[in-house]
Length: 171
Image (tube, rainbow, N blue to C red; front, side):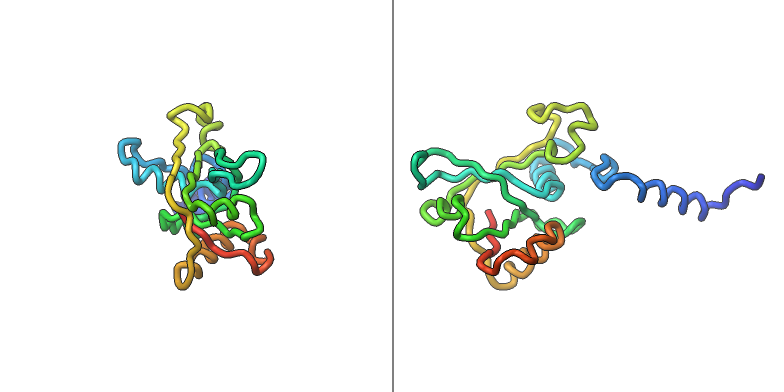
């Protein structure tokens, strides 16, 4: 039996890695925890959705925090912008809240991926990185809207066929 040549090793390794699920922990190289901004960008790029909390304008919870889950993207796979984009319609209850008060919080966690479970981390553990972004949610337009659509449609292809009353928004 002859030993395998280096290109064959690389091919076999490549085939093995390609056979692993996309959510495998191999895709995770978490930045050091003391590099807070890098960790935040990392988490935002790994997840496909966020929980957005607004201040409700709807009965019976007027004035109270109201949280809802939204698909989001900060860029196509491997191309993080650091800006979370969502594809929203004004018919959505949280968007109606934002039109009265644009202040909101977006929560994201690596618990939304397989990483924390594979590492044995509880979603509430500080070892299971999570971020909360707070600020004003605004509709984007022009060149930024085109980038946002590309970011969203590559990560959420179903959105391409959604009604045209949807627009891109960011925090």
